[in-house]
Length: 413
Image (cartoon, rainbow, N blue to C red; front, side, top):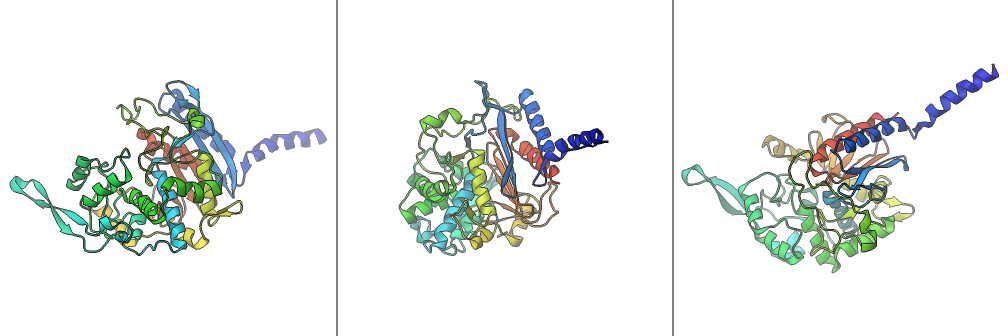
């Protein structure tokens, strides 16, 4: 009887050990095996995935290659270009300055950036032979700091789809990171807006402009502000806007040809040298563990390990929906609405409005965002859950984000 009981106990213990903080690690192990198969098939260069619940990192694994050309194995502390995952960092920084009374979200940006005092909106009208022409009309209201945070400024990107306004952006290279701050601001101030301020969610250079506004207000660079106010307090030792030479051997690289698009991969951001301007919308680098520490601080109400970067009320403001019915016109006009169905937008990322309304698993109040080259995160306050996925695969970014999210929620017990 004793031998039978011992056999039962030892057969059960490995199964029980697979579940920690209500997360089945066996499911996440199967996800890792799936990623390894993707690497073997030549679809994924390499990746680092991290899952945490209740403040505990439960899964932190690397697969594939840091550099698929050189076949260097991917380390867990690989440094990734996070592109648009820079936006939540810049947004948090803006809210810090708002807490201190150095900026007000309701203020027109022209108070800080006077070159934006007289902006105009581009309206497409029928022209000769039925060809649309661009008519410039005055903005009906000023762009506010709040508009920059929630992407309702009317400022767009020249990339991503097409319009006559976007064509004007492309003519002058407005989106380029390889230009000075003053060159960028001068171009953007002269370009027409895609929409009237405060009327439509439009993804674009709003957060870049916000970052440069913060530089004007403080007299410091965005890199200096981030280091002093976010990276250093939270222990994000490998985050910044450039990678020093002694860490350059940890920079993750993409395939030269994207296996999803079968086209040459766009030239990745050069992060081995300091940039000509600090892009608050797309210029940062981080490891998976570093970015997790920022997200855990948000989930904790603005604090991590005794260091506070935001008040609980500022975090609540940041993670609430700020579009209300504004997101519906974007869907109705057929334009790309990146948050997707069932999501509004907070001050830096998409925020889920209800438990349903989206085909991906999640909870009301969860928030997420992603980067151009395949980085992705989500935070689910109801489940006390954080997921961070890092890769450099622009063509596969949507596929791997969904694969990761589905696996993480499937692991909950």
